[in-house]
Every structure is written in structure tokens, then in C-alpha cells.
Image 1 (cartoon, rainbow, N blue to C red):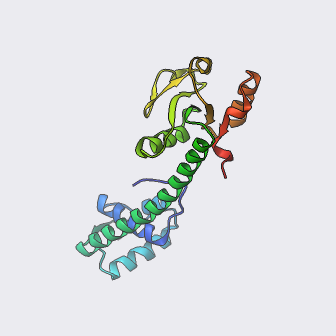
Image 2 (image 1 turned 90 degrees about the horizontal axis):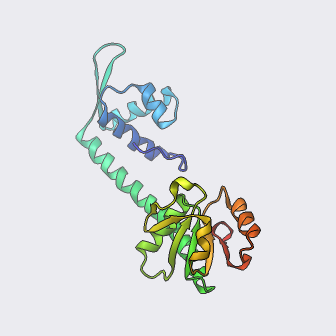
Image 3 (image 1 turned 30 degrees about the horizontal axis):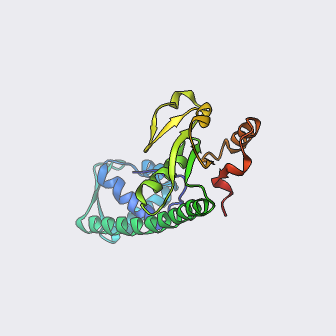
Length: 208
């Protein structure tokens, strides 16, 4: 089970989660399920009663306190359907987010920035690099990724090498694209102190 703090689980996703949890562990308790899906135990019991009524699960009582749960064939079919629907909705979110990134990259290309250096070797840089790699129509070249963490120097992030700040002068580029939200102000300040042309500083998080 993948935990995602960004999305709030819906009733349908909780249904999928419960069926998935039971399929993986027939001895799972209602309390354990409640912790996994983020609802009170009494609500879990209500879900289980409903799923049993619909024929998705069966229960075997080994004692008054010990219960084994089994997902039925009908329950497995239901789980597969829910999985497809979840993937479909997730794909819509992904496509929307990707469009925003592609629009941003095309905007900076149109402004004359085709050879750039990213600053910040984190998740944002990785997503930008993956987007560029998978979309052949994006005419932009990332010449390297700067990061102030020396432990990352010379390592690869997707297809780009992580370099040090001082390497800027050795790379012919059109601009620096800030790819760190947490450190963006510090990065701008550092570039300014080193007299880097502010017109060549691109900030992903200022894109509208």
C-alpha cells in the first residue's frame, strides 16, 4: 500500500484499500485497518459489514476476538475495477500537472533560454528532467544541476551531472533555472552576491 499525504482518500479509495489490506493479510485487525486508512474503528466495522453484505468479503470467527477475513471472487473483481478507476483519475491529475510544466518550459524557450543549468538537485529538478527526457518536442538542454550539498557533486540526476556553484563559469549557458522551493530565496541571494545577471535567473515557482 502506497501512502500519499497529498491526496485525501475518498470512500471509493478506502474501499480499495480495505480490500487490498485484507487480501494481503487475512489476520489483519480492524484497529490495524483503521490506522492504515485514517478512520475510527467503528467506521471500519461499518465498512466491513457493508462489504460482506455485498459479497466482497467473508469472515471466519476463530474466537470472540479473533477473526479471519477473506476477499471473495466478487471482491477481487471489485478491487480490480476500483484500481482501474483510481489509475484513471490519477492520470488526469498527472496530465494536468505535466501540462503546467511543459507550458513553463516552452515559455522560457520562447524567451530565448534553450541551454540552462538547474539549481537544486531535488524532486523538482528530477521531474523537470524526466519531462524533458520523455517529451521530444521540448527543445531545451540541461547542461548540469547545481547543488550546494557537496555530497551530491559529480552524481547523476536522471541524465544530468550534479555540479558545484563554481562550475557555472565553465559552462556556456543561457540562464539558471531555480528548481528548489525551500532554498529559492537563498539561491537568488547567492547568485546576486556573485553578480550573476538577474535577467538570466529563471524561477519555476514564479510561473503563472
